[in-house]
Amino acid sequence: MLGRGPAKKLIIYVSEQDRYGGRPVHERLLELFHERGCAGATVTKAVAGFGPHGVFRKREALALTENLPIRIEVVEDAAAIERLLPFVYDMVEEGLVEVLDTSVVKYARRGEPPLASPASHPRVRLEGRAKMLTVFIDESDEWEGAPLHEAIVKRLRMLDLAGATVERGMLGYGASRRIHSGGLMHLSADRPVRITVVDTEERIRTVLPVLDEMVADGLVVTSDVDIVAYRAGRGDEAPPVA
Image (cartoon, rainbow, N blue to C red; front, side):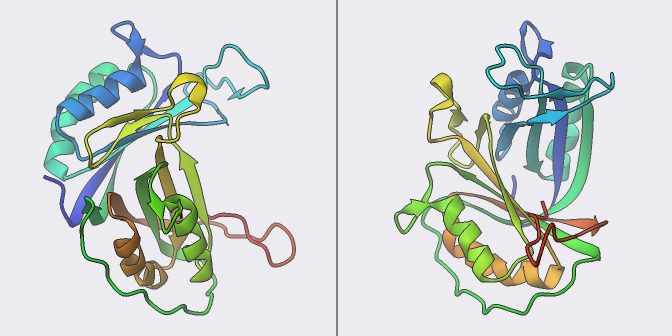
C-alpha cells in the first residue's frame, strides 16, 4: 500500500489512437491500474509531439481527428509497479515506458490535521541537482472558496518558488477511487490536475508543510532531477520550470 517514503513513478507515453482490444490504450491502462488497486493514475494529452516514427503531430484548430501523444502517470510502491509491468508491456506495442525513483510526501484523504506554513526564503540560482515536486488533485477541489490548483500556484509564487506548471488531465482517478474524465465536450469541472514544480531541495522542503495543510485529498511526491537550463525569457521574468 502506498505510504510516505520511497516509491516508484511509472510513466507511459502512447498515441491517442493506439488501441488494445479495440479500445484506446490509455483507457485500458487506467482501468488496469484501477482494478489492481493502485493509489491513483492521471492521463494527460499533449498539444504537440512526436514518437517512434518521427512524425510530428500538433493540435490544429477545429481538427476533427487527432493522434496526439498521451501520458499516463502512476505512483506506487516498487513491488506494485513491478507487478504491473508485464501487463503494461503487453498493452503498449508502440510508445515509451519508464520507471523513476520518487518519494511520497503525502497521500491523504480529507480530514488530516494541517501543519504550519514556513517563511519565505530569498531566490537562488537554479543549476545542477534539484527536486521535482508533483501534486495530484482534482479540478473541483477548493481552498477557501477558490480552485485549489490556483490557490497552490499563488502560494508557491508568494513563497518565491522558481515556477509552477498546472496540467489538466483528460482521465484519471485518485485517493477517492472514483474515475474522473473530461465528460461531454470536455466541459466537466472534475478532471484530474497535476501541478509540477522544480527548485532546490531546500526550497522544495519549505513548501511541503504548506501543501500538507492545503491538500486534503490527493497525492504529493518529490523526485530527483538535473537542471540543464533555467533562463528568463525577457526582463526578470522566468518561464515555468516544470
